[in-house]
Length: 115
Image (cartoon, rainbow, N blue to C red; front, side, top):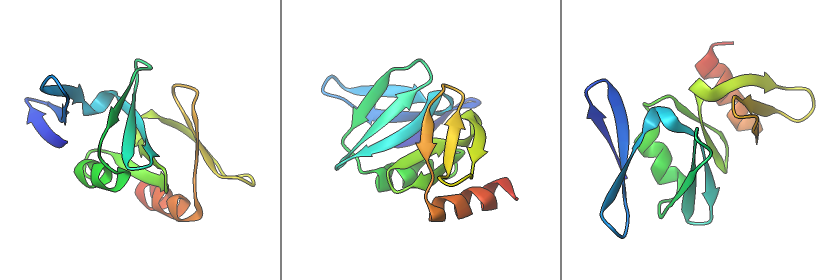
C-alpha cells in the first residue's frame, strides 16, 4: 500500500489479485485491525481488507489526517463528530459508528486537537 498524490487528491494504491485498486484517502472513515490484516471502512459503507498490519497502514497514513486512537483503530479525523470522555472514552463518527479510545489514544487526540 502506498499513498500517491494525484493533483489535489491523495489516494492509496492497494494490490489486488487483478492488479491495483486506488482509494481516495478522503473517503476512508476508519481502519480496524483484524489479526495481520487491516479492514479499511469507506464513507460509502463498503470495506476493503488489505494484507497489511495496522502499524504499516498507520505509517503510510500518518501525515494524511489519521490518528491511532486505540490499538485496533486508526481514524480519519475529518469524520470525527464528538469525543465522549464520561467513563469510557469513545469517538462518535459521522457515519454513526462509535470507536473506542484508549488512554494513550486520548492523549494523542488531545495533542492533535490542541485541548
